[in-house]
Image (tube, rainbow, N blue to C red):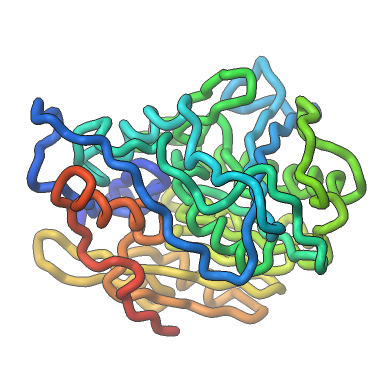
Length: 386
């Protein structure tokens, strides 16, 4: 199942897999580095499942009260994508910027994930379902959700889910955790790459503390926005109607992988977050570094969402749940301490990256460029409660 790195923790994979084993989505028809001519494929994101059109805007936020732990000479800067229920209109936005796309392509194309020649996917030329220039729907005030990506991951590779959540009636603020994220591009053209070594990184606690502070700061800035201020560092115009449309009495937080751990820890430290869920993330920063939420539980609702791990040597299937502590003992520990409503929702045949946009991209590459497969698409898996 991969090299053991401690109690229940195994060799990690890029793009948010700090504590999850590798299970690549491979492309057998072309090997990496092949000189064969490959047509670059654009990915079609699925139609929104909710009743509301979705608008989107990016905020450049600067926390002048904090130095950046990864770049101590500067203040902490974040890029945050805000999606919201919108009126019809506007133009569909690019999936990711031209500065971020090549860096994410290099990671996503690697042997741990899609296992493709770099440049196979036209990430920058693909479009999200969300639209820029769309006025906010003011028919009601919308609950707010903060999203945190996986360790070394990217908010861009979770945009399909955040866009879809907004179509169901939520304002979603998706954070790039600068310096730890795979890459972050700022409005002035700076692209900040990851400063962490995902395979041999002893700074998990620093990353967690930084993420919690990021999440709380973003909610502070959304509160300012709701009260009429423009928190964007360049003061770029906000979408019409967005101010005054947030219901800050209903705030939640969720994340993928280390972002799920971030969600639980943020809730422990900040009572403004009333509910949360963790998508397939262990809740420790090292062998014995269990989070406060694991050790003490939460007094507000929290859900665990998880998939499978298949041992490539034996074929044995492990469920990432609170019941099977061989893979991850932190979930069982959290479950025993959780005081409020809790749910452990498992998706049979899914994998760690089934809960990201890679699940959307991989099956489409068959028709776009190369024969690609996944074991079971997320939309075919069977869900069950533990």
